[in-house]
Length: 194
Image (tube, rainbow, N blue to C red; front, side, top):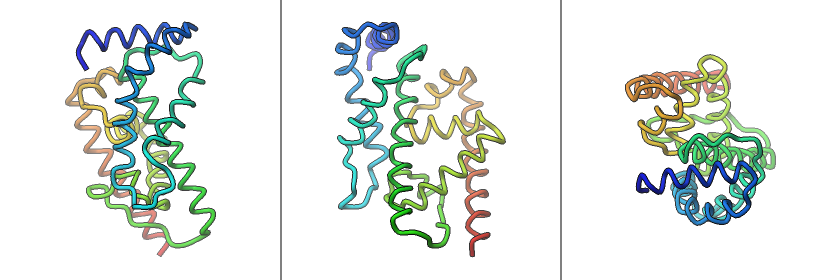
């Protein structure tokens, strides 16, 4: 998206947050393709016959986003980070429902290098990853946010740095350390259930 469009999108986000319904109408076509890209990132490895389609995920997330109030939208990347968080929670809720329906089973093995992939269709892996990410957030909130923004939102290193107000080098360091921490946490969780 061109720089001019970014600032105009940010202006529309702020106007919408201020209660301008017309801004929401103008904003929707500007953000829809990017929301589809983020949803596609989540859904790219979903197994055939999945219960949720990319378009349905976008629409469900969009409905939740337009109900968000009292948000001071800093810029478009901030909006898309919140959108990715909403999508993550929608898919997590869906995974929890599938696991509850099946009940039980051993903790899954999640390989972060291959399957740091919330859309893999493996409900238990999604839940295990979310639990590990929540544990990381208690230990180091910024590293958890880096994972959320980079992996779940698909933001670039630069966009992540802008949101977190840190350098790109810090984002890369946090990304590497957070991935290692999550991998160890998931391996530990798996070994406790076997």
